[in-house]
Image (cartoon, rainbow, N blue to C red; front, side, top):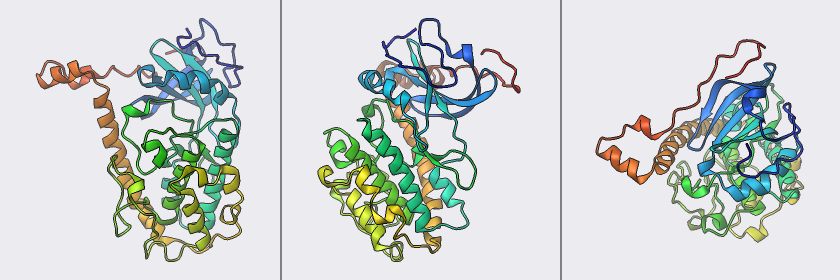
Length: 355
């Protein structure tokens, strides 16, 4: 069963049976509704023995970094932090790696903020503090997330004071997907590798968006977006354009400036950033940021469209040249290029069963 030779470690999730030959996802879990589909993975809601709800992320092995999986996944399974989504079980087949995750159902961070009736710097600082807590946990164990962006930040539930959760680190091969500008740190975009300092850059981009509603290093008027994957943040100067930043505190600007330094060696660590007065809650302003909320609504609409477009482009890159040529010649239909998704059974109540 274990194709990668993964030392899966001590199981800690709801299906905590000893890993070994014969373990199969459908022995303990029932797949339910489709929650999302990307270029490299598919996510379903699932039930553990018909009772406990989880999320099931099925990754195609052809796009995984084998070394990262073998080196990092066993340790990541054991991480427990209130702001990290738990990996509760792992199943490995010749073609797929399946992660059973803690189910989070509160919606994405930016979308939830855009729907709020009141939003202030205090709320933004609280969000950044929780994200830093998750990064601190990862970095203290020698790991980096390498894919921090708004889509990876979700609320645990729909409750008003729900915790923000960071979705698990990406295990995909980055060259198969477009570069995620401007979240990709300068050193990573130059091929020098991504580490904890790169996560701090990504957090700086997220914090910038939380405070004004659009990405840094955008158009000169500040309301644009670095839509092109080739846009390099090293070619743009960080600025805080008015009127969007006129009422943002100097303390918030100071934190963002520190996080978005192009030299990774002088960026604050997660530990250091947690001690910043704005992050601690000492200096954030309390007035409603109405313009930021309006900008976030527009930003979310553009982001969703861009993500859908990039997913299509990434999928096409994974198609073999022979099939692309056959498609041009009319010999292969688009449906034949992508393997069919696994059948999803209808889940009724707590009745146990298999797919």
